[in-house]
Image (cartoon, rainbow over all chains, first blue to last red):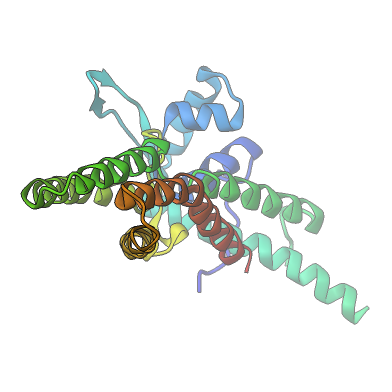
Length: 103
Length: 159
């Protein structure tokens, strides 16, 4: 059971989606994230840099078919922060529903 | 406790997370070429068997098995439909590869049964007929099998 911890860095919409996609994957290529989230290259780079600086994401550059690819992977710290954030969101929703039932 | 966002905003964020998880679940699949390659290989094996040269049949079966054994471990998990993403194993379930390989193995039994039936009915090329039937099952049924895996993953994710 993950302890609820609201994460201000993850919560903004685009970063939340990036981390949610990466949480379900071992890794995802830059192009996959860009296409799924309909972002420009620069917008996605900026958000990934923010997550990388926080230690939530690792950017890898493997070579495949003679081309260098860019792919992102959630770190254990990032995964733990995401799970804590989801737990915090669930707690907020759950508390609200409890208040509504007992009102 | 003072919460940084409203319950409505929290609900919207959870919906976003669920939508993004489903986007990854939608990527659980095997490459199309796997099903088509398997189907064509199956028909080729049927044709060779109907030539009634036991050594040729044995050699073709070995080659078919070796090629499949080299390819299947990389793709049969359903986690690498494309080179753009590797789906986490806890999303696909641990047994997807076994399910795929098990279904392929059971189709060998179906092929033998269908070939025996065709032979009893006097067909000149019973194994070819049976392998074409099974090839159609592979091409049509393979993607359906993975669609079922995706539905199961979505249900597990929602619970």
